[in-house]
Length: 92
Image 1 (cartoon, rainbow, N blue to C red):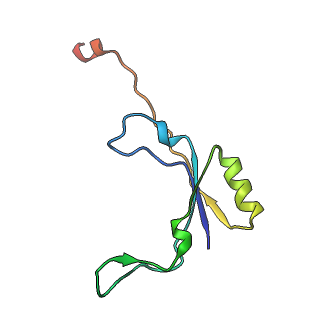
Image 2 (tube, rainbow, N blue to C red):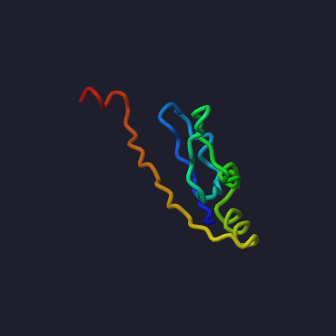
Image 3 (cartoon, rainbow, N blue to C red):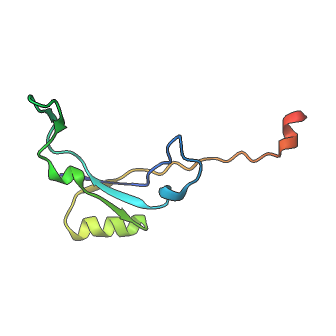
């Protein structure tokens, strides 16, 4: 059971960066998901797949994982390069 620590990226329908400042600790799935033969729903017996903890900083997420003896990996943060230009630059 390994934990992933990452900072979520904004999705395409989101213009601001409101939900991207926190760090998330999630567990990798231990068991594969299976389809229920009667209803056709997808499910799993892995209860840790439902846990998603949010932290204010990467250090606090790493401290929680090491304090509880969880092996973890930290995903690198991709910083977006902003190209700032004025509206008048479109007509040069």
